[in-house]
Image (cartoon, rainbow, N blue to C red; front, side, top):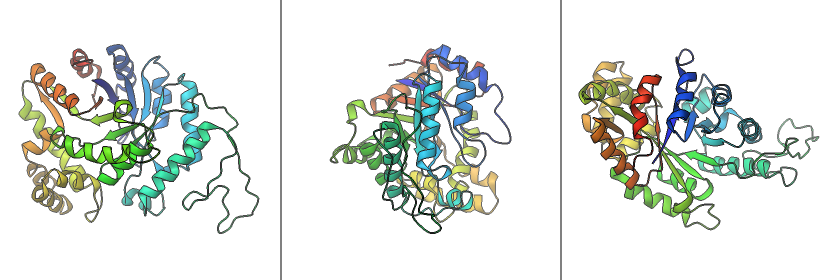
Length: 346
């Protein structure tokens, strides 16, 4: 089981101790460092800045939002980071949700599966650099010939020769169709709110993608990176209590009441009643009550909490379920050092 450090996205400002934690993660044997974005900090800059102090760990985005950049612009970011890091970049992509896509980026959210397939195809064309990049659309036509076009658009290929044509592309996916698409066109799955209990269901979704004509990977060479809070503690109740607030935020507030992909994940786990209650309370501004409505078992579905022996046993269970990497977040070097003995756990 590999470990990845998840830096996440920034809140009001840059996270404290991030530079030291990134270096400590490499020294501890972590395989990768990931950064995210929402509608504040971007994902590429922290990797370039803090990652410059590292030599071995992979530097990945988990995730960059499709609507934040055109496919060619994203490919430019990825190939630049790959050169600067000596071939350590991992491009993690995700569609985000309609609140962000339409509210922040001012673009339509419709047809996310179609957009993802087309986006990844263009990125791969740029990285292959086998000729000028063209695309018939309908989402990202190259050259552009729609409303307002001058007709002077010219197919281009990148000036800079990409270091790797096969730079790995991972997709953040939550629903069955997205996961199947990920298995078909990507090199890895960035799984959020993963629970080993549903491994057989996830495997059905993945196998559908692996079986499609032209699928890039098979289960044997496909990476599954699952985000999980891994906490070594003698007081699990206190950690569960803390995580209720975070969980209620994502179930009740990170998405529209009519369409919240995070809430849908927990519904698929069988928590329909709890999700409804949490969402209703959160949307009514009753955040403390929403957090209190999160049951212990819901938290423990997607987290690894306990003493060191218990944590080791749980990690083994996640690995047996098919997870190849755990993406963990830590606030400082001291917390990372507590996890360091677990790196490489079998």
